[in-house]
Amino acid sequence: MADFATAALSAMPGSGELQLCEAGNDVQARRRNDRLIMLEHGESPSLARRGANMVHLRYDDAHAAMTRAAILAAATEQGDPIVADTGSLALMMLAERVAASTIPVLIEGPTGTGKEVLSRFIHKASARAEGPFVAVNCAAMPEAMLEALLFGHRKGAFTGATEASEGFFRAAGGGTLLLDELGEMPLGLQAKLLRALQEGEVVPLGATQPVKVDVRVIACTNRDLPREIAEGRFREDLYYRLNVFPLRLTALRERTEDIAPLAAALLLRHAHDPARGWWIDDAALARLEAHKWPGNVRELENVIRRALLLAGDETTIMPEHIVFDHAASPVMTAAASPAQIPGARGRNLSAIVRQSEAQVILDTLDDNHGNRGATAKALGISERTLRYRLASLRDAGLLAVAGGAR
Image 1 (tube, rainbow, N blue to C red):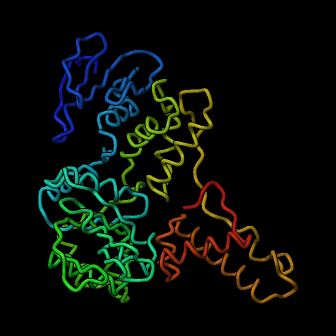
Image 2 (cartoon, rainbow, N blue to C red; image 1 turned 90 degrees about the horizontal axis):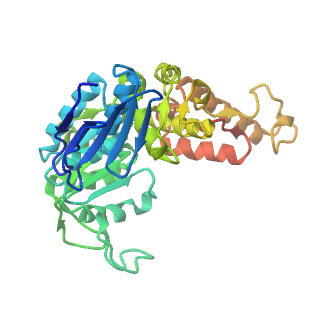
Image 3 (tube, rainbow, N blue to C red; image 1 turned 180 degrees about the vertical axis):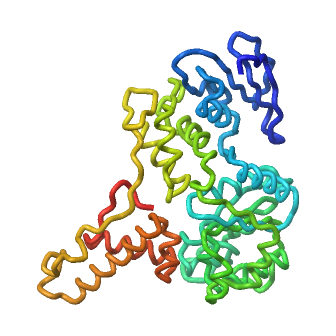
């Protein structure tokens, strides 16, 4: 790395050039959207953001894992996927090819692996990049309102519809519509989604004529859709309509080479003063790379934010600053007597059932390393139902969360 003079690297179309320059060398003239990484060899390595488009990297060992990770993190435009693992790099090459086409995209993978980030990358690399990107979480919207929110409605179509709405499909016109957690969509609405994909048109609630839409759909799911089809919870024809070229993100524990650059990028993103210069000690990085990451990138983000807080005035993250998330744990043990259960009197059957339910859910969460999607599947319920049950048990005082459950 000491042999670097000044280099300009091509980036994604529309994102400007990326320049690498050794400290002391002349910097080429830059446009507004060009980005610069200033490299400096010296003691006390650090990574600092100096303005929106400049990062300063001081390194003591050009071949160290953290140095290479820091360069990759600095070179990646904010919001883009950060990949170093060979499998992740292969996936990104496929994503670029898919972006150049017009086909629908299905992205599968565990919760917290970065499916929305990959979706935004596909949109940005496509011919629709100048159009809107609209992200919709199918699990977060009330089922009764989902159709109206997606396809729009006319004024007076239902109680409370005091004015018309175009819906997300038309709002994303000329761009990309992301349907996140597609596996949570009700079967009846899946049929209407299939028609929208096949015919390129939607029928707003209260309307009698279809409206043409020009939108590319990207669907994301953490569910095993073939299994959902077999169990009657997902339409087979919709699956094959979306599954033209599936992309699958693997769990973070299966792509350990991505951990260091992701951690470096999160360090820059969440440091309260990124201009000070931050670093992750080799021993701390080793702890990160050895962890199983049941919560994937979302858990890694939690750990980095927690480490920054624990570091206080220090700018180097040390092993003692790394505190991993823990799965939810029951307040009581399974052997606790009914009289000890909050709100119970003697052998109160309702309280005993709720305590047993809490224990079964928590045991299953533990068996699945805190992964809610896998836990819901094992219990034979939807992830939405699992979230409701956890919240209900927590409100009843039967559940405590240590370190943030996923």
